[in-house]
Length: 330
Ligand SMILES: C[S@@+](CC[C@H](N)C(=O)[O-])C[C@H]1O[C@@H](n2cnc3c(N)ncnc32)[C@H](O)[C@@H]1O
Image (cartoon, rainbow, N blue to C red; front, side):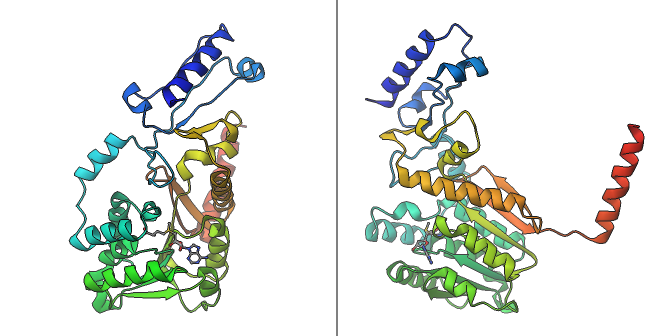
């Protein structure tokens, strides 16, 4: 059954089951046929009564299947953004082609070019000198990050890239060399957690890009914070924290995981697990008083995390503010 048919059949069921006004939020019908959707499926009368509404909401990710990289933006908006972004350099182009040839079913693991360019910008704008990349794969993000710091090579700028896949890393190494970036980038092959665990607190990073196994995000984060691996102004960029938008199923009472559909049918259980890991990570970061963070709903969800700077002055000022405010309302 096509997604359009599925959608229509669901809508007619819903329409027949209630006399309430039905606000229906859709993207344009042209997008429906290639859009992954979340159908908020209030087939149980209980939900209908409490809500008085039926929501049919679309998540505009453009991935048609598992081997495509998801975006939370409609495909046409993504393409437009790409055409107004610095295009890939020849090394990035070659790397992307070689990755697709060598790993046809896994090439979607590479960060998309828009995101890669944003990483270049972040590294450059924050004047990062030391970067740690956890999960470099074939190096698309590595080249992007290294590009952001290459002008600071003479000041000792360095990127350490970790991955446990030696075949992918060999491709990454080759392109880093071709791009003239080998003086900046050091690769380490092995389990990223083992490598990080052995870092002493004398080693600190200005930027950490987290893009390895999703089940390990929270452990990586805790190791980074517990071992004080972030420099004074250092920050973490964690990728895929919205995981195709599925994380919503763990925090929104009106979305159940069983209600999530892709074009090819229900979302597979392994994706449920990844979404759960990402939600746990987001929750833990949000609760951690050592850091501040912002979850950007771009690409597949980017969480930016930096050390909280709470000076005694801030605390005193906040207390004074609360005191004054309580007097106002007395
Ligand atoms: C999404 S890919 C990284 C993509 C890369 N950042 C890019 O843009 O091309 C995730 C990578 O994490 C690596 N990985 C998974 N588990 C790991 C672990 N325990 N230690 C190190 N690397 C790991 C995988 O081999 C894979 O290459």
